[in-house]
Image (cartoon, rainbow, N blue to C red; front, side, top):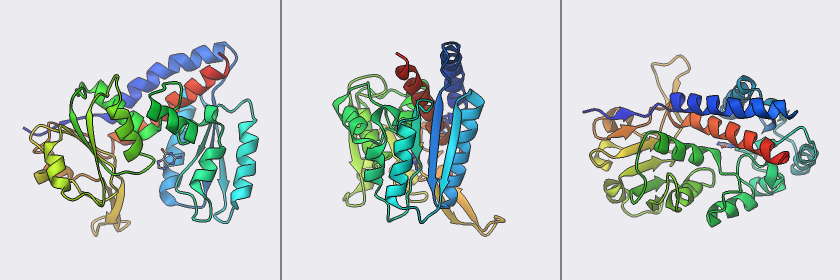
Length: 294
Ligand code: GUN
């Protein structure tokens, strides 16, 4: 039997309709949630991602502003802008789209955003709170979205063997931290696999749940998946495609056609994790606005 597909678009739409009530209540109390985006340079994927986030904000009634800065922007100019946004009371969230140009330190930039406006969950204070299981922090949007997908699809994480492929700061590491905690959509036994892992296939074959965030096109093959396992594909990779007008196409970290025959549940890509990242950004922003008046 082919895998049941996990419809990220439908689950994200459900979350957005729940958030709409919270936005209405904030507006009744005189507060409109505000979010600032910053994008440095012309990375084509970042343009698309920020565009989608702006559109989602507009649909929910969050006011957003986008600062597009040239590739040559200095770190100190970016820090000056962030300081202005930090002190603007109409803004409840600040998001600096990654990747940044090589001459700008992501850790310096993410540390400069006020932790209370850090709706990306990248500030060391929020990273620390995640590790400590302190729910007062903001959690990074993509792994938080994966947890929400699992919970709302009825995938049991309690006691489950989970393999996270990838150890990046945006997905892999926070994903593992969330899944191994005590609590809802968590309580799993987590293994992180990365480029130095000796036998990734052996780890994957033990997994009840695989979260693929390794950044390698179609890395997860059918012979790496246990029959009936849940497979979550976080990857977005551009590869050559002679049949497409642009000469390229986007594929995930999972060989979808092959894995679909083995997995019990599988995220489509697109339409799986991507919409959930946006839903969690909206959720973090609404929460930041609520906290600002509480
Ligand atoms: N680049 C890829 N994913 C993300 C994300 O969740 N937030 C930001 N700021 N940049 C990203």
